[in-house]
Length: 204
Image 1 (cartoon, helix red, strand yellow):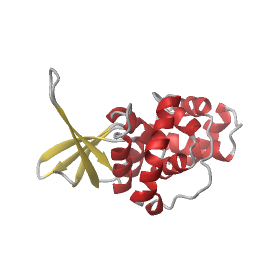
Image 2 (cartoon, one colour; image 1 turned 90 degrees about the vertical axis):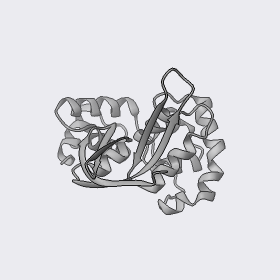
Image 3 (cartoon, helix red, strand yellow; image 1 turned 180 degrees about the vertical axis):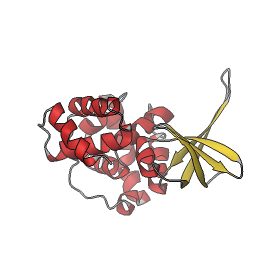
Image 4 (tube, rainbow, N blue to C red; image 1 turned 45 degrees about the vertical axis):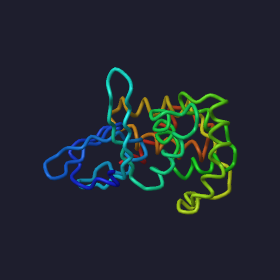
């Protein structure tokens, strides 16, 4: 079983990282949170979750990489929930940071989970019910220094438009999404064009 992979970051996209170790390139599926954490680095260390799917026409073996043990643990908890598969769990961790996700689950904030693409009300409720106690018992929330304050709501329509505009301007999706989210948390009523202007000043 692979615990982590450490080596040179050979390729990076918002969904995939290729880490070269001793002449072998390991392709790892990643979340936007991990993408943001490792972007610009030459050498990285990614904690690994191995997924082997058998029984279909084609067996598959996929490596998932995470910038922190806490994010990997949250991913592993998410895929134990009925209705949450590998890609859905990665989508959740691409939309909400690990600390925010702990907050969302701890506070029963189903609206934030429903804002994630592919998550309906029933699945959001199931995630909260199934994982609330597990997150507390696992100690993840403590490790991430999660507060008990409810997570700030973000207008996802405005967020998506702003991130799309920034991407078309040539900026990477992960830092764009991070900047836009912070701006909308501070002022949820800003129009798209104002959000884009403020984000342009923040993204490096």
